[in-house]
Amino acid sequence: MKPQIVLDTNFIIICIKQKIDFFEELEKMGFTIIIPKQVIQELEKLKRKLELKILEKYRSSFKIIRFKKGYVDKGIIEFAEKNPRAIIATLDRDLKNRILNRKMVIRQKKKLEVI
Image (tube, rainbow, N blue to C red; front, side, top):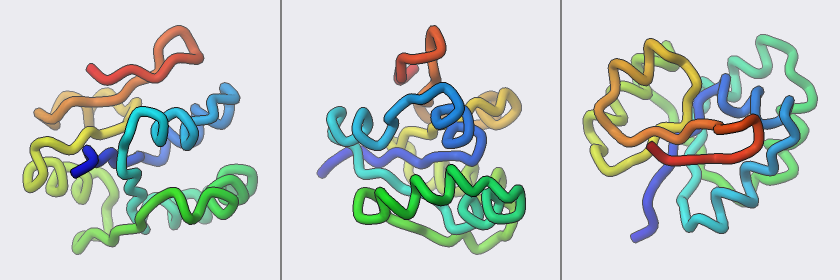
């Protein structure tokens, strides 16, 4: 079974801003990519058209899940607790501190790294 990785809103925004082809990188690393429905809704609310366009382009590359609770961070924390082997891709310091799972971060503005 391929390892799962959950992408947070800020991770997607920063990857696109820094021109990191994260879908291709994550697929090369062998991950099952998961994007919460609430993350997509946040991007819509923030009017992040480029990010939404890229998600649409790569729609076949990821699964969409819906958290029971509407708040993204709480949903990610609950998902991480239920799936301790899942990797969480976030740049949110508070979220990183609250999750025991391994995390994916951006190093040197271009490299994706699991810590």
